[in-house]
Image 1: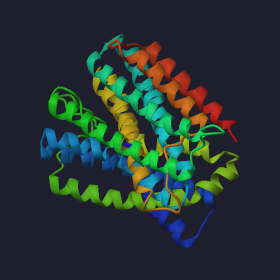
Image 2: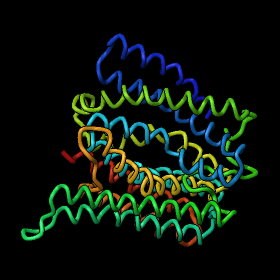
Image 3: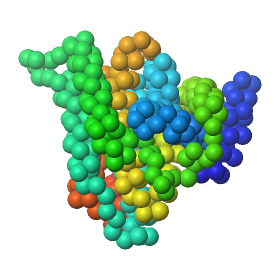
Image 4: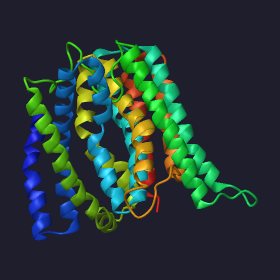
Length: 359
């Protein structure tokens, strides 16, 4: 992934374009989005290094908590700007992207190189059950919001339901971490990249703890500024491209926030470490569903012009249910092959095309 760091030159370029008001919104969006890619990679590597130095238990928790930090920052900035539609679409897109395109590419390329690959079916089953819980928890507020002529909920009822659901999901996230990180030593930390003898490139890399902490702080600050620029350009860019905010949120924003982690998942699958690859892709999706999404619901009470609820629209819910259902069917047997990877990618393409036509 070292070639990604060449894109760091775009960080000052994006800042200069914004400060001097040079170029249009489309240019600002593209440059700031590309600048986020190496920053996300640096953040991921620094987080992994700090996790190594702090030991497996605290390190696993740190990896799980900060694995999606870049995207969390982007969505908080979007919430502050009142782009709730984009935030919800980004949440749905992150889950869909991780379980379909990231896992699909990893399974496809790993299978083409190594044939049938095997992984822990028990942990795949645990992931499948808690992912199903998360998707059902997201669907319930939407169904509740529809109501009927006699039992139509108020807006405050929906907000309270979302807040309560968010708290329950965060508690489940804590229990999930307790089980996978603290009670099963052999399991890859949720949402993290894990640390094996043949782990992915870009792990410790000789980086000292003070340097890693400095990079963690510096990259986080830079991501905040780049996110401000990108989020400010989302609406006019989507209008200029003839795309809906829903499409931008579902298909584009998640790719920017998680591109470094996506590349690592594919790399380790091609090294015949499919269990680690699944831990990255599915673990990241789980983290978005049971921690990031509910955390944003609670954070929205204090930032932005309006609170965010867990009421997703029917297009997002159908895509989420389809993605999770296919992923569960493919992963619970503890084996994968290239054809299953192709199936996941095919569904992602179909969903992407469908969202193009959503007004």
